[in-house]
Each structure stands twice: as C-alpha cells, then as structure tokens.
Image 1 (cartoon, rainbow, N blue to C red):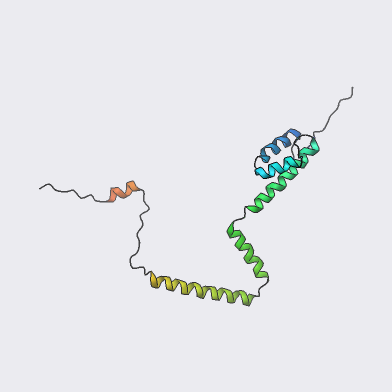
Image 2 (image 1 turned 180 degrees about the horizontal axis):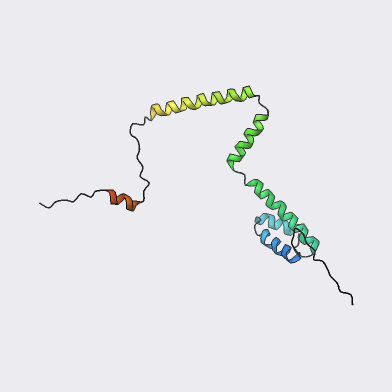
Length: 142
C-alpha cells in the first residue's frame, strides 16, 4: 500500500478545525443582527469551502465595526483635511485670523464677567498626609 503523505490544507495559516474554532469565537463578537443575517444567508461552519466563506464574511463585518468606532476627534480631523483641499491658503489664514480674534474677544468677556480675584489652591496629597500637617487646636478646660 502506498504511503499517503497528505499535506495539511491551510487558510490564513490555520487548519480546518482551527478555522472553525476561530469562526465560532469571532462570530460571538458580532452583533445579534449580523449573527441572524449569517444564519438567514446559510453561512455554515461545516465544510471546508463554507468555513472559508464564513471566515471572510466575519472579517468583513468586523472591518465595518472598526470603521464605525471612529472617534469624534478623528471625524473633525478628517473634515478639516477634506475642507483644506478646497480652500486657498489665503482663505485658510483669514479663517484662522477671524477665529483667533473671536476667541480673544470671548476670553475678554469671560474675564470681565468672572474676574479671578483669588487664586484657587487645590491640595492633591492623600488625606492622610494632609491631616498630619494640620495643627489641631485643643480646647482648654476652664
């Protein structure tokens, strides 16, 4: 009988069982709606081709989740980058000048209505070290 040296089939560096296990774990990361969609579209975790298709679809869903997790700061930076393409440098400089003048006038109004007469002292030491430095007054008995 001939000796069969079957080479293990891999996808993304994983064998069949590893890929199945990965799909099971990563499917749990998806939203309930997406999990139901995969069931309705008959994505199965059995059979080599089905497991690969499911793996790819889960990757696609997880990629959209990462795109949705963009912070507000990133959105503003992206909007600024896009807006800068359609403005000349003079328009950008004019806007920055107007913005700085507006910010300065707002700061002056705040200082006018809320003058800072006393500096505020904040003690960030732990409570134990604060109490050891405070001199406790003792009442004298008469």
